Length: 366
Image 1 (cartoon, one colour):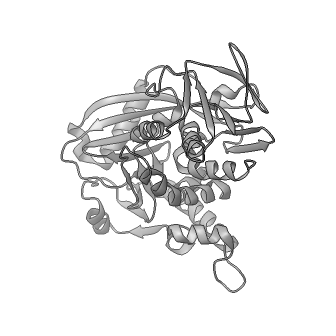
Image 2 (tube, rainbow, N blue to C red; image 1 turned 60 degrees about the vertical axis):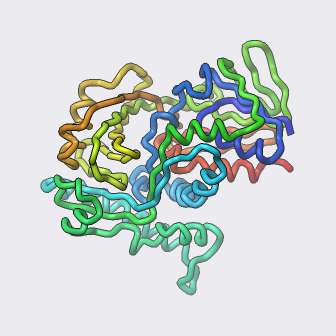
């Protein structure tokens, strides 16, 4: 088929890669100047692949999509010519002494949701039931009784010697991380045969047609993955997020770490050889201006409280972007003859995108 796509962010690149490999003629339109222009939210994300941790602000479908995506990422990356940093060594939740109440509320919520999911995935004989259950079990993160493991301080030091501030910690096996900048570049480079139409804004997507400034372009099928650009056809809004890249030569950190704090979410995600991504604010604003003083102080002070060695790290990059979110902060996939819309990935983009793409392509006419 001749496929038209509005949007060259993470979803657009994944879709273009898969569709081109399947033999379709793919045209991608995006307002960015070129494949390296960092306008899409996917560029800014830290790349945590944490379906259990994200249950704090997600539902069962996001969890299932995240588990499935964890299984899909290795195969996607293996087929790319450009290497992408990816690992699945688990993740950590940590809390300081005095913040036990806030931490226990989060852990309790995660355990409650995991327990409900575990019950749904079991048949009457106590075995895993159904296709989704098999997928979840194979990823090693779906069982409620081993998904979140409380660990003692000495166990935390064995896993991550550089973490010295927090008094409480929980380990979540099976979760992972991906280098988002490398992946965005590799996905575009790997989508051979795709026709990229840069500096082209799509004003509307209809079944079999994309409306651009120079008129209407006809296709056999259209994918609308424009994020906030999909307004007014979808009630999507932008949620401001800010991150920092710290360079810390010699720092030993292997896993994503989330600090359970009473007022804000803070995470640290390592990137080889010596970078740590610290984020992320979550502000109901579509302001794209540089990172604020408040976010700088709060996020970096929190990061230093988890890893004291970061005191001598260098701030090499800061970035602001808008996460596309729908009113319920959950993703949507709408499919009809000639048109597929995917939007509202919010803070779960890298976690769920491969499985959403798989689901969308399964609904595509042969």
